[in-house]
Amino acid sequence: MSKEASPKWVTRPGVDPSTAPHKPPLPPADYRCFEEHGLLTERNAVIRLSDGVHIYADIHRPSRVATDLPVLLAWGPYGKHGRSDQVFWPASGVNPEWLSPLTPFEAPDPVFWCSRGYAVACVDPRGAWLSEGVFHHNGDQESRDCAETVEWLASQPWSNGKVGMTGVSYLAAIQYYVAALRPEALAAINPWEAFSDWYREFAYHGGIPETGFLPRASDNIRFSTGRTEDTWANAQAHPLIDEFWQSKDIELENIVAPAFVVASWSDHGLHSRGTLEAYKRIGSSEKWLEVHGRKKWAHYYAPENRQKRQAFFDHFLKEKSTLVPAWPKVRLEIRNSAHEYEERAENEWPLARASYRKLWLDAAAHALQMEQPGGASSTSYDAAEGRAVFDVAFEEKTEITGHVKLKLWVEAEGADDMDIFVALQKLDADKNHVGFMFYAFYDTGPAALGWLRASHRALDEERSSPEQPVHRHDSEEPLVAGEPTPVEIELWPSSTVFLPGETLRVVVQGSDIYKDSLPNLPFARHENLRNKGKHLIHSGGDYDSHLLVPVIPEGSDQ
Image 1 (cartoon, rainbow, N blue to C red):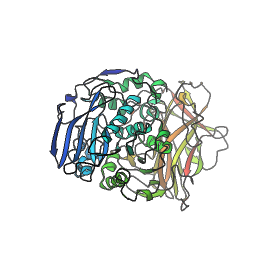
Image 2: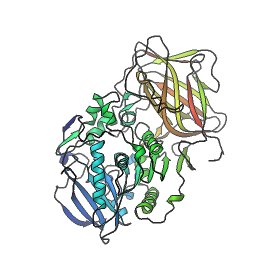
Image 3: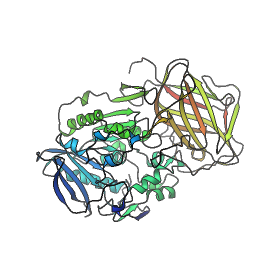
Image 4: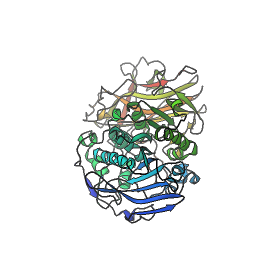
């Protein structure tokens, strides 16, 4: 992470917090202590940071327990006064009965946790809502502010000196940042789906600018009495990885706090990759991974998963004897479809026993083959509206779980660049599309997605592996007219089972493959494209276009 205290990135005047839509009325900034829902609530408790800036917290405690309370910290920019029961849409799958009226968005429920002997602190960061200062979106300043807050909470007379963190998305990502600073009182973290690479997972998928969720997310964090970082403007001003993106980097290897990390196959385009990368890289000796394929908010708030969190925090914040040390290090959902799946315990991620198989593209036949075609062929599609499709039907049950790579030899007619969008899909034995959970709302999604702007094809050789290409994104190299060029495309990790007669389909086109979304809901889009003319894909002979898939042997030892 950058050590610059005040990054020189574009900021903008904050929007009056009292005008925020879809929020309850904003309470005044005065301090109040009162009882509600059986809890003792301190509203607008003042935390004085080391540079004199004051930020505000709502702190909930059990009414009848005065001391020795572990603390759960929910740190996010969406307003500590916001309520989850007022923002979750019916399609999210969140049962309103799972939430008390005090539950902030994507945060732990104070009524549940306080009834089990915890305090819950919900904090508005520097420059957000009524907290003083300039809001910096992740990076060094917010990390240090959060670390100071952890130590402040641990020092309160009612605290037992141990702080844990839990939450979804933003409330998960901040945990990576603060845990990397190793505040002494941070006893455990529970990041529940969050990107960990700003450029590759949040703003530029394969170097292609994301224009749907990113500006929406930027607007969601503009409510302030001061100034806020203009994330959308900064992303547009920095199309390549440079000092701006490096200021958001996280020293994941520096994290040593016990960690219960929850990822999903169902958030391609936002959190899936980053959560799995974080698990791989964090240095914690006590860490557990769960990967599901459900709707993310419903999965977080489901009662059975709340009980898992309690066991985890009871173990590390209360030093209770629980079954956590006996948990499998990794637990995966193995998917047949959106609604048919099984869970399986594993020892590591990625799976060491995966056998990587090349499925060779035959452009002429629009097929995937077990053997490389001897003769060269090509297929083309209109860059704006067309697509290429390659299918393989499996003769035996086949599980594909892990990282997938698509290597293509490509050419652009009428342009010196091309934006490539890839989806892995499953077809049943009757060639009908099999849907999977997608984002937090849909059950019609793909098995996996990938993207690449061809001019961004240069690899970071130190970070790349045969199954997972990592691109540098620090310069652009145009395509040469008439010259087929190899590109390697990372497909985000997934898990899919194919029964005999079922088909794996690879879709390649020049724009978003999944475009339909419910009104006013977050959805990744890519509308600033460079496509013109025709895209060509070459295969066979000298053109080793192929899909590299991790096949898990059936019935093998874990």
